[in-house]
Image (cartoon, rainbow, N blue to C red; front, top):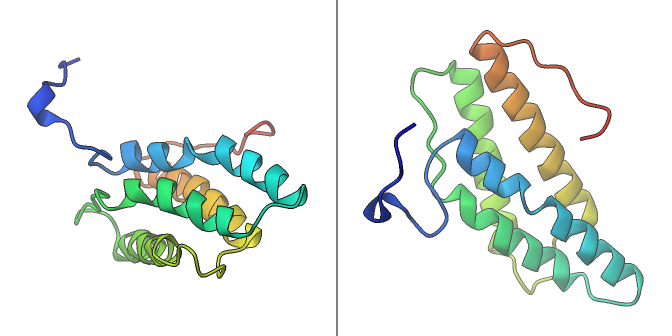
Length: 126
C-alpha cells in the first residue's frame, strides 16, 4: 500500500468510506456525552458531538459512478449532519438525532458494499 505523504493529508480527511469511518469513530464519545447529560449535563453536549464528528463530512466525496439514489442518500446525510453540526449552542440536537446519524452511517456503508457486490451482514456487536 502506498504511504501517505505529509502534504497529502488534510485536517479532517477526504474520501468516502474513510470519512464515514472517521465520523463513526466518534461513536464512543456519544456514549460519554449521553452519560454526562443523564447526570445533569446539558443537551448542548449533543451539539458538541455533531460539531466534532460532522467535521469529517466536509471532505465527503460522493462518486458520480454510484446509483443516483445512493448519491442522493449520501448527499442528504451530509446535508442533515452538517445542519446539526452548525446548530451548536442552540440545543436543537437530540440524542435521537445522533442515534439516527450513527445508524444511517452504518446503513450507508452496507449499501455501498452492496453496490460493490459485497454482501454485508449486520453485526450483533456493532
